[in-house]
Amino acid sequence: MSCTQHLHDLRVAPPVVLPSLLLCDFGNLEREVRQLEAAGVRGLHLDVMDGHFVPNMTYGLTMVSTLRGITDLPLDVHLMISNPGEYLKKYVDAGADLLTIHAEAVDDPRPLLEEIRSLGAGAGLAINPPTSVASIEAALPLCDLVLAMSVMPGFGGQAFDDVALEKLRDLRTKISAETLLEVDGGVNTSTIAACGLAGAQLLVVGSAIFREPNYAQAINQLTQLASSPNSEPNP
Image 1 (cartoon, rainbow, N blue to C red):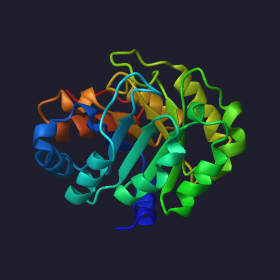
Image 2: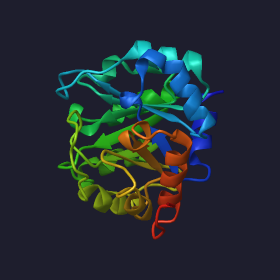
Image 3: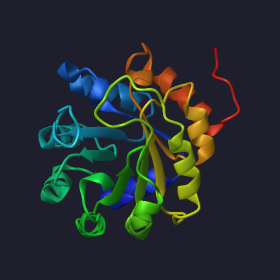
């Protein structure tokens, strides 16, 4: 399936809960993917960290390529790296359908967003909690996705920062109807309803899925909460 079709599929009937694979069992990666597919997930989120732009290091091109060989689900690749322009083609070639760079990593994201689109992938732009929406307004017309981080990237165990909700509401008034809004960091059963109400269409979730014994039950509960912000989780 093409990147264009994958992007279209993510735009249809939001919200979409995207499992972040950082906490999955990498020793049984294919089994984990099959369980997520059986649970009805509509895409996978991959956090690429380089140990420079953020303090931690994770997987890279090999993991994206491996996953592309395992599944046809859309791969939403989040580059938390310095010098992302050096790697755009490599990640698209490896199988990324959506490729997100950080505004804080470049002087001007617009040429890189244009390049991602020219490579046939969806172009995403992420901003950290301290970064204003105003600082990226000139780049918004080139975005297929805008990611509002609700924690500082690269650090675990942080509390959800409500500033992301303000940014989601602001962004919704500034982007086209085709542009997807994503939130990442501390998204769980306590915070996901507010994210959905603020306009998030793609909701990146880690521990609230992978630390639960039943992936399908966890994903269904999270999706219900994101779809109906005033509802309570099922017992």
